[in-house]
Length: 100
Ligand SMILES: [Zn+2]
Image (cartoon, rainbow, N blue to C red; front, side, top):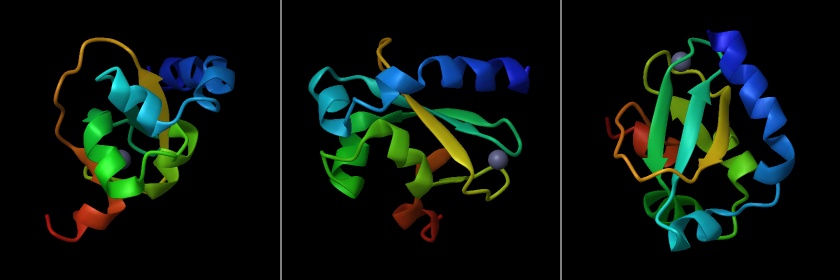
């Protein structure tokens, strides 16, 4: 299961590299985050991340700033999710992790 998701992330890598948080926020899209250690996945609102990380942050780099709330790993992969926005719990920008 985790392997399948990881492969999907690889397939979308080229597109992901060109998309910034601003692009996602403008379309009210979300960022799909997948923990590479425990497989925990979460959808994070792009507008929220813009406020925390800045609008010019490429989605592919957002994962370097995220921390899994399931296992604490910072090995998180991210990709754009253009589907309807669904608020998710379980993953947040690193800056907020200390407050939880
Ligand atoms: Zn995890």
